[in-house]
Image 1 (cartoon, rainbow, N blue to C red):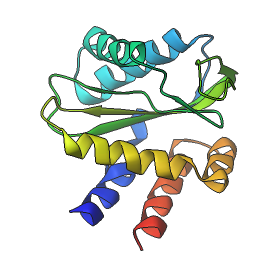
Image 2: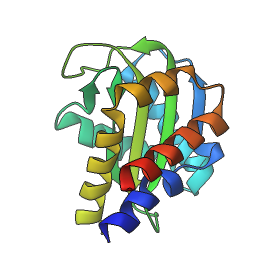
Image 3: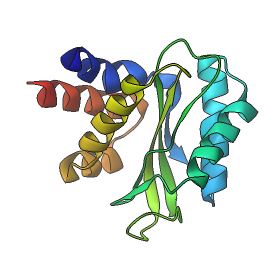
Length: 161
């Protein structure tokens, strides 16, 4: 199952519509609000419900994991399966990250309420991928949504091997 999950994680979670290659926002709250709006549009969810779930999780501790990366995540009513939203923030914003550095790469993971261990495994897979300095650099240079999605798909294949 782990190999199936690894293949699913980034390759299948992201759609072209759930990637924001140039998001101009000024605060962590605006990042999460915009991610919520993207989720509502792409996955037929209610933006306030997504936003509240992300803010609730954030109140338990920052999801800014360092190196300019944040991985906000929540379980959200109305989802049939796990979904992802990726945003490249320009300029980077303060996110209360563990290294106190501003965040410019955000990968939000949304899961159905019943996704227990699957949610945690997906989160770990995303965190492993985002720890790659090479991938972070390529994501920062990628030309658009298709290029970003291709980078994640390639990362999944090379990590699964």
